[in-house]
Length: 407
Image (cartoon, rainbow, N blue to C red):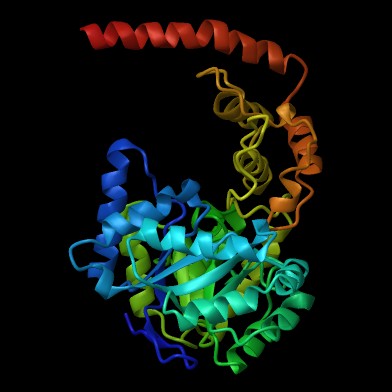
């Protein structure tokens, strides 16, 4: 890959970074996650992103494990302090020191204030967060300081002007252009010589998966060999202001494809026809996508056990792909209603506690959106069928597996 240089600090960064948030830490899959990270590094990825809150700190432990045997020296490590939770100045150093210990490192290359907006930044300023960052730099605990932004576009420049930042992390993809971020803001940060890192380039995988047939036809007409993921990643990488695109790769096929794309796509390399096609595809999708969820999972876990991202995902899929009612409702029942495993995670369990609302990076009124999901899928008799699944289907299924294991 052809690295991109951050003018502020001179660091040479691979255009594709490894966003570690979605890596599995369970059992045998832990070893596969560790292997994926190393394969990525062996193939030129030199930026790994994690955070304190990912898997309650266990994601940072995975990174520490993967970077043994000389791999630490090959990469820049990015992690984040949960700034949205910090109430006092005295809480800041303990977080940083704990992260350094978990990561097994003397310093962190890129340290972000996690999930901030203007209001949070003003509160942090009042409790001396900038003094904390200056002190941590002086002590050599962090080398670069930045923020991951989840605020409104109109406030972005104000946050940029609050401190002498080294970098920022923004949500940017062709679907959300002008919603989460726009080029005016990106160019402003770039004028400050900051590194600009991008999260959710595939909008939680939505832009890499199946598309409505009309969108697929548009893409195939221009280039039948390009995958949907390639269209989406290429659009972001095409911007010369972008330093690095963080992708949450969870298997070897995704990793290989994304590395190939990052090798092939240079700044300003997309044709006018390709850019026009992406814009047209975006407009067609916007007519069908009902809930603008990035499936980032920040709203989880739900106190009532609702799988919020999957509820929204199945709801969006029904309208994106014009799924018939029976098929869509059966899928919802089996995946979220507990009909097969007894583990109900459906929208109807929402108690309107609103805990998720303040955590949503898309600023969605999640309880209200869940009402739409419930209305669409949880028809009369839903709970009865759910109960049958729990007390009839599940025991029968378990019995079959028990018998098969004995053979």
